[in-house]
Amino acid sequence: MPTFDVVTGRHDRVPRDEERNARLAFFQRKDLLVDRPIPRLDELAHNAGQEAAELVSNTTGFLAMVNLMKDGYQYFAGLWVPPVSGGESQAALAEPPPEDRYMERTSGWCVHTMDRRTALPLDNVFDYPRWLGKAVHQLGARSYLGTPLIDEATGLCFGTFCLVGRETTEWGRPGVSLAKSYAGQAMEHINELPDHPLPPSEH
Image 1 (cartoon, rainbow, N blue to C red):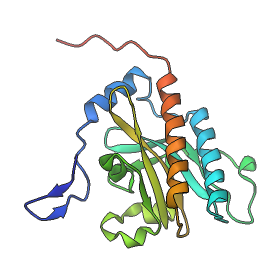
Image 2 (cartoon, helix red, strand yellow; image 1 turned 90 degrees about the horizontal axis):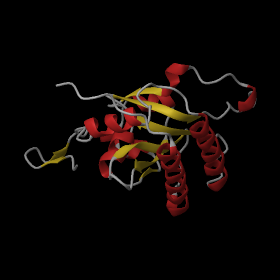
Image 3 (cartoon, helix red, strand yellow; image 1 turned 180 degrees about the horizontal axis):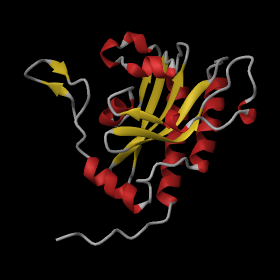
């Protein structure tokens, strides 16, 4: 839903969450209300982070996330964190700490990507000061590319697939196409998860 306020002539800092109830019902049906890493989505994030780095010749690598928007917070059910330059390979590192998979709904750019319902490429996040927040410090972000996870059958938006870079990035059409491709793969996997019967409604 548009965030432009005709009274103030400005955009709301954080869009209203109009699809919360329907989104959480879907997560309940797919047994996704409980926060847990999903190995297939971690794999997708890993592949996307590496492919994006090769595509735009980024030497520091990209964080990649399959981000499910929960009730007031974001959970990275798929996550790839590139190794620190000169450090151990990612395969030799322990899993990212559980807290690294969480972010407030009000932080970052994914909430705006969901609201736009289309890709949001930011070559340099500092060029968009009204969207700056704690994510800049939490992730060391300098560039961002997100695309929404939209279920074709229902039209609901469940989160995003996103890439975060620690240097400015010229995403261009190839970068956006890559992100959309991985968002589609993530949505396919989520839809393939088995359905769980919902508890009877309380009267």
